Amino acid sequence: MNKQQIMELYGYNDWANHKLFEAMSSLEHEEFSRNLGSSFGSMRDTLVHIVGAEELWLSRWRGEQGRTLLKAEDFPDYSTLAEHWYNFQSQMRGFLESLAEEELQEIISYKNIHGNPYSLELWKQMLHVINHSSFHRGQIVTMLRQLKKQPPSCDLVYYYLGKR
Image 1: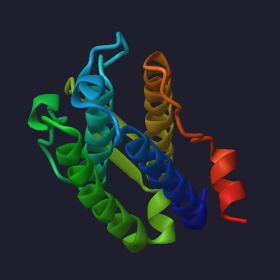
Image 2 (image 1 turned 30 degrees about the horizontal axis):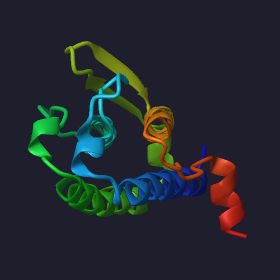
Image 3 (image 1 turned 135 degrees about the vertical axis):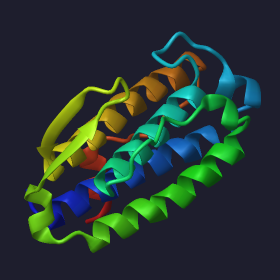
């Protein structure tokens, strides 16, 4: 996998996250934070998990230690979380732009949230993050449907079609 492909996939990831944030901007607070029985309960908690996981992985790639996942209670409402996410996007973009092609092949060692050590090429870790975010975006789409809301189309093919 090369840098251009990684940049393209992270462009998609940002686009899809943005579409979901837009779709949730008109929700009532109660709808946004209601436990709908998903992995993380509510749309808010699932978004916090997505953003927190992306931040955690970025800190690993930067060689930072001791980072933990975000806590949902630190984001009492939609606007607080949206602002945090938009600020984080620029950090990720800066990291991606600064990457040299050969760094994608480097083995990055890290400990997961349970303290277990792992090592894997950077590009594989980066694909994992995109896949992880896509999985949880799908859960949010389901929650929007449970509330009888129209979810956005966040499929990769729509990202590519929109760029034509």
